[in-house]
Length: 291
Image (cartoon, rainbow, N blue to C red; front, side):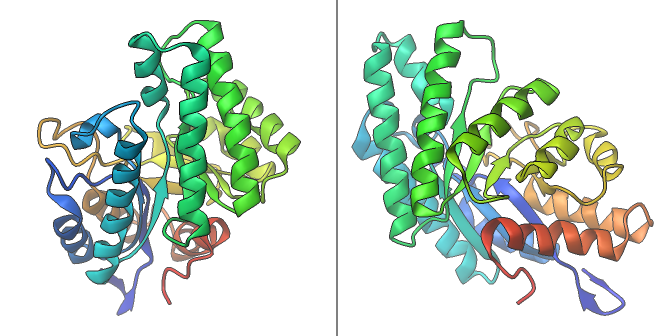
């Protein structure tokens, strides 16, 4: 937990907690804290993961409320936490699958983004997410629909000074470039747009253009690859808190254990960890991890 008696700034930039079927935020916070975790970003799940109804704005509101409450409980347990609320692209895709028109999906998803912005304006959440494009194969007109939503969301986020967590396909530089172009057109605050589940190869181009790549610790070899680019990213577990899928991603407490091990065995230095988990987190969220 400490290096020469000092607390380490161990953090997780993107995780979910499920108070309906999972261990929920309090147990997550206790396990995370026990391993030295200091800061965690809690991101909204899917409506149906919480037993709620896709396409129903009241269900979306309840999902956002659960996300905000989860972050509050984690803070209560002595771990710093912020909430990010929004509609995952799978929500929109599911409505298309159920026969909703493109316009109906566009309108509903925009309302979900507007609602997320209200949570940011009211100080309940710091960001909108995870939003973006399907990472699975979809027709071009569906990609166009989600790109339209993305551009709309960037504009809304800029208006309320919100962080954005993006869910994207992993298509390397092409993926990063498409987002950079959009963000430049809209003019979002530098480093307020987080590329969740980013590939190491995008670190340089993303960071050079004011985006923050978030590298998944659980994908074999990717953190090790990311380190070669310097501490120009943040790290995430993408924990889903689903007992039916225990091995889907690593838990937050495993992420911080791994970070500490990398420090102890000399793979990363203390300055590297400090930039990763203090400076970069402050750059995105304005939070002092160690304060």
